[in-house]
Image 1 (cartoon, one colour):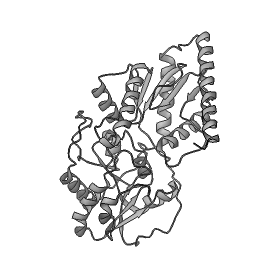
Image 2 (cartoon, helix red, strand yellow):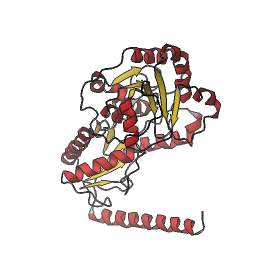
Image 3 (cartoon, rainbow, N blue to C red):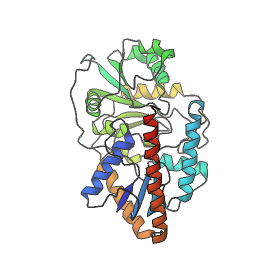
Image 4 (cartoon, helix red, strand yellow):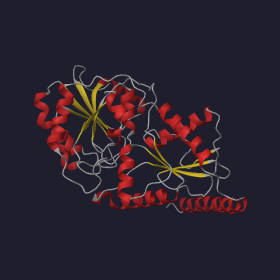
Length: 363
């Protein structure tokens, strides 16, 4: 019996965590496991990115992000994330890391190594859905895709465009397709976006993005401190190789690299699997330019691999849950369960009343 605290009705197609949790839940149900609506009586109590709120069953936390950075824009968010990591590492029965990078950085910076932990990479469906649409890019152009459905952490759009415009004369057959939320404000780099080789698209339905991926030659991802971006797995399942930064969680997956789907650009000298101090160092433009040119001059020829398959990820979760149930005794007494249950129900009811009150006051 399994409780997943972040599982909500309805799928947020623009949120990688929401998509993965729903896939995992469907898989577990198909495998005959029981998903509970609350944690009481569960064997596994799974929460994403924080310690489960009710001390019931075997407490498992999957750490989504790394949260170590002195970036002033996201300072408060990082502090909250850091505190959640410390709490989970100190009190959860087991930790799931999404990559070797995440485990290495988190445990080296916090100096906390949980007794039970496992690395399980994300995945995407092996047969993605495609919705053809009229892409306003000439069919004879070779597309370099730079896509993200949200803008956190920093996506380094300016660094990417600045580099591209310096090498563009050598690649007249290539164009950039940028996909990101149009709510973002990039006023200071509008002059870069106005170039005729740059096409900008708003966030789109996954099946439309999959079709754009199938038309593209290379995905570029310069995100840093991202444990395991779903979009890299989605690109691979659409047959699209990626050039990623050295602080992208996929950079530590040797099997994925050997498949030919990943090229690594060593643009960051901090917060990597080898070097853990997390001060921000200057972006290495020369390394990125060299890596991008090499990828364009020598297009990757990937081989079929199951490293990016969502089913492989789900099987690993199931296997780890079974191991934990065999290894860790259940903790709570019936008295404690009753107290926790009433406290849990009270907090849920209170939250509903507060939301209702705010709505009635148009707040």
